[in-house]
Image (cartoon, rainbow, N blue to C red; front, side, top):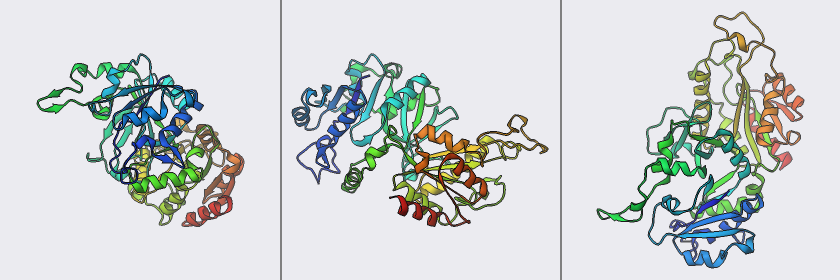
Length: 425
């Protein structure tokens, strides 16, 4: 599979630190960021690379040459006239699905895993999506239950009151057919028309029109993808490299997780939470989860929700409750990497109950099914992970999964997380 790396940006905000070199050659722990990315791709078997370059193109070419010193084959497309962040795609020989990566971001991800997901879905585009610490001022990707993108909200767009913390990371798998159906006139790209150079915007002109077509999918991943476009972000990324955070987040490596119960652990316990107005974070929850986000652990929620089987809450209503939880966490700079819920309940006799959900399942805590599913999805080493909850069933589920388990009282999450991080980091 070909890899197209968009590496033509000026990096104007970070140029105060590196005024004489293009952004792709900015060093991270002594090695240019683009070189690190190419090495990561090569190690995963992606060796056919196209670099689209413009600003200080000659310096990038002089450094990488034909790519042989890194064990890859590099072709160049030089934008003598800026074509936008997708204009070059219409001049490349792209006959099969390809990876399109934004070299402005620092990333280390298992792209083979993403490509397998893309092939399984049979769509035109797969977006690498993840949560971040500031969803309130980021663009948001809204999907349906099959992970098909239904809305793409720019940060200036009106958004719903509550939303899933899901942001496009600038990494994509794209079929050439996506370029064909957008009806862009190639002959006009880069030409001056009515005093304006015609450029192509990837998001606005190619990807967003695919919303609600069933042809574009989200690929959610907790792997490391961060912009280093400002001096502050650059220093943060350098610190992450030095501490091994960037490499460790790659899902080809075993992950560690802190599993969190929901009711009485993250939000106030109200018995069976049936109404979205009852969702209220505990005072220490966001701070505790933010500590997890900054650590080497994933934050994964596992919660029994028998209100579904009892017919008291619909799946859509539960989604909205969880969206509110993610929105409230995001407002305080915290996010969860995954959420699993059990909708089953073994006992019958409730008005409006859903009979097909009334059975003894393997996912309802104290059984470990949700933790085992998360372990498979995120390549988690359960023996290095921990379950935190306020009930005996939480603790039993963690032990059954092979995790350390900590039982807390309401409001004790922060202390428990600090203890785990102090003991194991």
